[in-house]
Length: 155
Image (cartoon, rainbow, N blue to C red; front, side, top):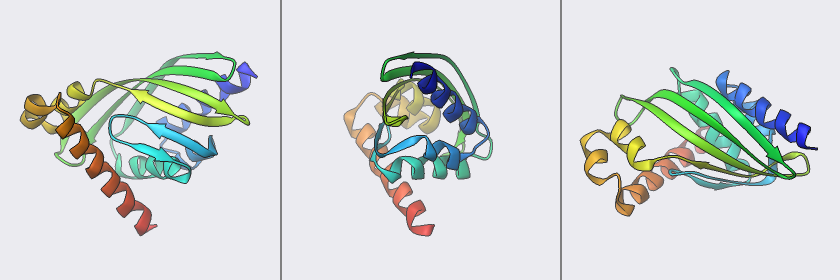
């Protein structure tokens, strides 16, 4: 089973590198949960987030490595380079992902990254000054949720 989970993570990130959000969405369990510094999602919203990011990320570049799997848990390291749509600023985000699998699919997916580091790049001076604060994190999360809801409504 570990080889199947390893292949699932590899498929997920290869699809991401090609902006193939449908393949990415198909990697998730119907009851999946996703969390990172901007999103907390469940079910089909996980796939919709990747659909939105792949659609909007015209200059998105993804690299991944260090896939590890043990039983029903896994991890990977990945990096993304893109233009943040809210400000037009260039971002290089460095992420460590943790996975839990169920029924051969991704059941839980948690991406860890330095939110303050990301906010300094994506938001500039505001991110530098307030990127450490829960207030800015909540504001970014609210804006991300609003953007995803608008994307979902437009489909």
